Length: 268
Length: 312
Image 1 (cartoon, rainbow over the protein chains, first blue to last red):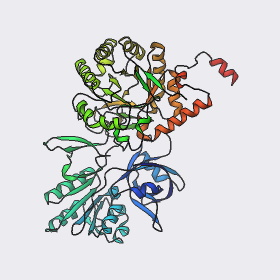
Image 2 (cartoon, rainbow over the protein chains, first blue to last red):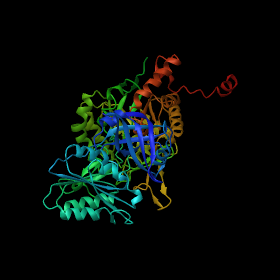
Image 3 (spheres, chains in turn cyan, purple):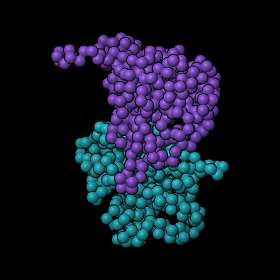
Image 4 (cartoon, rainbow over the protein chains, first blue to last red):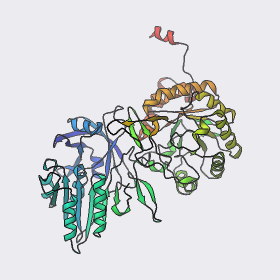
């Protein structure tokens, strides 16, 4: 059951001129959240912004083993993300969650490949931790415009997660999109059992889902659609999903997702 | 404290209703809200058949409000009765079913089907959705259309009939009067205001449907004015709505003339809004020594402006 918490800002760290990680004192939500679930966030109490916005839970924050809160990875694009970028310690952010269907975890001997584009890194900190805790060999494929927009690399490597990087300007890892190292890995995977997880812009998700299908590997993708409520009330965040009969129908990504099997989606 | 509301043969425990299209089918919110504690749950608009709705993008936020063009995606009346109604009955919800048709016959058939279903308490007649081309709003935009659809439905059902009115007309009060003359047990208003938002960089409409319906606090004063006008035109109960966010907003609609209210957009922002509204209403009743909430309906005092100004 989701709860609404007026969460105090514990800290707010700017990673770049656009990216920040904001830590929120919402232990009830952090404790209940599974990797891939999200929260609906509203900074301030006024009418601008009026609606909440969805964010993946980035980190579950612990102090001496006790859950203290959660963090969000945010990129400044609109009004809500600008307010999250500017928030200071002691401000409050209304936080509703946890919401949505989480990722399904795989276990060794299967490998987990997490594919992140930009701010799509967000769900992979908690997913990576959960996979590593199960002993699943885990790789993060992480792409961004430049090396300056690749964050938390040490965080992932220190937890035993292998990195495969790509940048559009070639400043770190492969030059080009993240599908470059992903396709190379798929070609070399042989008979290994692999689950591909992806989060990022929809064209990237489409490319990753198609690549995975072509190489016979299942994928789970976390989508982001314009969302009104996060609870299944408004029917705004729908995404077309394949029918058994060959047609398609709209599924609410808030309660039917945000995680879908890549092979189930129709890319509009 | 008596918070009850009478609408035709139906007695609501309190005036707070979840607005159609803003609460799914109700079951989505069962974890967050005790559905039995609401005056009523109004279902998402139902046609006879399933509908896929409009392609996304379906909503866009605007100052203190939002535009939507969902296009009445829905599971159709038969799946609703089979898949949703049993659970709503089990949860003790008072169920008002919002029905939509393209023709008079479709409305009548829906009313017939739902009148035979167990756990249906009233019908809200959607003659006001601005987002679909066919039927519906063409009835709600004319006096004759409103009269015809309401009287045809009244002939085939024992359930209270509540036509939901559009604000996109010159004189909503005359439409309300037409509904009353046709035998409506109440009217609900307002549905959303037809509106538009454009991305100036791409010069494209922000909604795929080009236009959509505006809701939220942005429309509240217009909705209050329309409820006030309808109160002076009809005697039947009025269900008021438009951007209700606080208990004061509920009371404002009631003082303007609403017997009950619906909450829509703000339920998206705060799914736990219901207990806050209820607590605020009770506090107000205590503070003003009101034993029966219906006593404030339509009590706006438009004669005492000068006196109030002097005595303050």
